Image (cartoon, rainbow, N blue to C red; front, side, top):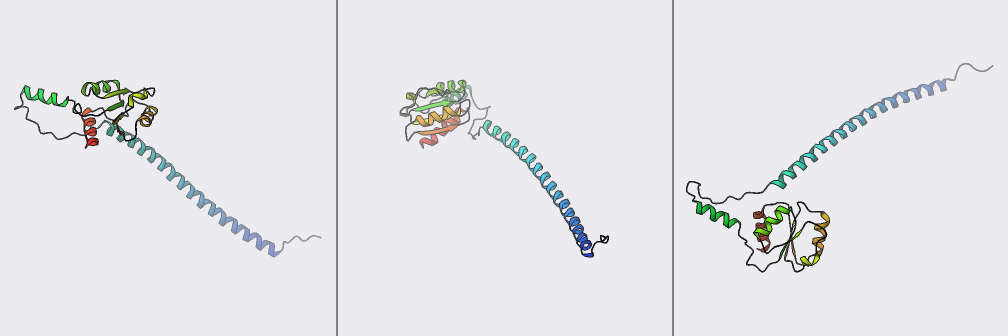
Length: 189
């Protein structure tokens, strides 16, 4: 007849395994809770990262539109005459690079901006915004101005590769001609 009472050792081992199983179950629950906390933190971090990326994009756009103002010594409007105002307007539209033996090529920017550049600086060579420009137009260029508004990356890279060594490359992202003039003057200084 088989023995119906299990051995004491087997019961003791079974009790140990049940305790171990309970301990492991508690440990699994703790690790699951910790994993859930990490998952929530990760999701919160992702949401915060997206929010910061959007804010950074907004700040970059605001900076792209920002044009620093210089404090100019001005005559009060009560004292200023019509002749003074005409003289100020004419001084802003003068080509300050006309007398310099300098070849400047301009690539990029909108068509309206390019027209303003040609009007203010007739000596500048406006290449356009197409990547299929004539490479010979860049030969002998002293300063290459690349307006990154309304121009492809391929066009800017081709232009940078086509200029001679020693040619200064000025990259701008503003349509303000006064800022352009100041940056060119800074290169020449």
